Figure 1 (cartoon, rainbow, N blue to C red):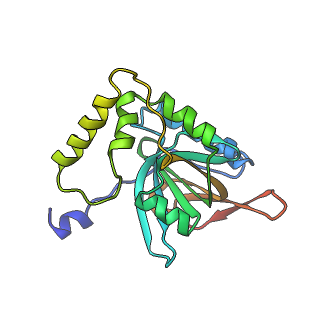
Figure 2 (figure 1 turned 135 degrees about the horizontal axis):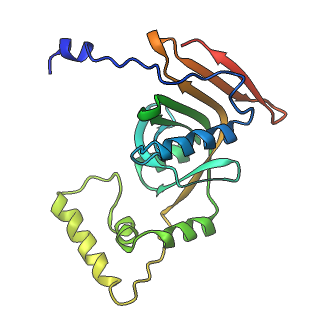
Figure 3 (figure 1 turned 30 degrees about the horizontal axis):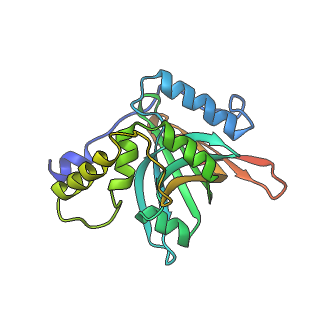
Length: 216
């Protein structure tokens, strides 16, 4: 595809609107409304979200992860603490999430502070995963350089063999959950002529949310 072909790619958004009158004043409730609608709209993995982190120097990094719960006032996900995102979060405990639901022409941005999830909750979620995913969390030195795909598969086979008799895999200490405590939400609805609806919620010092409309 040439540069000109890419520049000609264009999608017009006109299926829905977002007004201050219809949006819920609680951004957590509004997120849940949109999330349920995305699930019903046959979105592939509506809980997929881009997670942006930065190291201590401010250099950013981004990747897709899966939302696995909304609790304790935040958004939960799980990963290897020794991965690049884990290292970033240990140096700079602030992050941003982005959900994109193409069928509904919507996105949600969320920014806030990251905290470690309670270890018992990490244990509970780890036990709920398929055994292959549990073993994979142990076998894969996430984000580290490896010799080859065959090397990673060999690591998995070695660990898999260990758990065939008991089928009980203990969560490794280097794997667990994080929770992002939001300080900002932005709900974005695609509109014609790139005049999109953007409504932002910003957390005040007293714990209330201030709602403002942003220019597209």
